Length: 135
Image 1 (cartoon, one colour):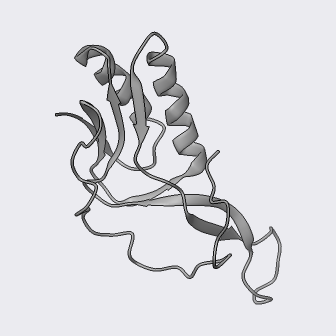
Image 2 (cartoon, helix red, strand yellow; image 1 turned 120 degrees about the horizontal axis):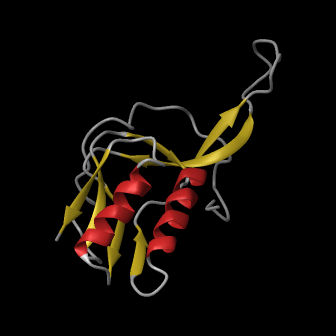
Image 3 (tube, one colour; image 1 turned 90 degrees about the vertical axis):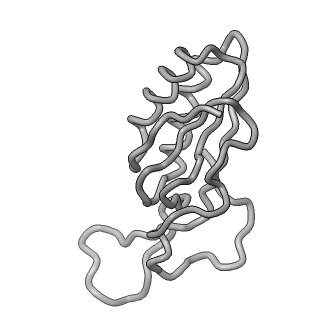
């Protein structure tokens, strides 16, 4: 699974910057087909890995996949039955902040029907609503 090699700050504070619309990564840059987020949220590294597995299953003969998001945000969790206080919990996993309109995955080298089937089946694995887009 994806995780940053080295981080400046081990634990981050929670913010409300997860809301809003994407301004940078909102168009297809590499492939002909893509999966675009319709809602904002956090996508964990496990979800990204699950989508990668689904897409590679469809592109075994030929084709290329681009993952446009990276999980760099640490998500902390406290143990069960731990009393209030006593500091912040340990880092449990990493997640990527996805805003509405972000192109998360791109594909090329497949027919439109098979790419649509692959990306729509991959969308079930994600925590945000998505749609299939074509260049």
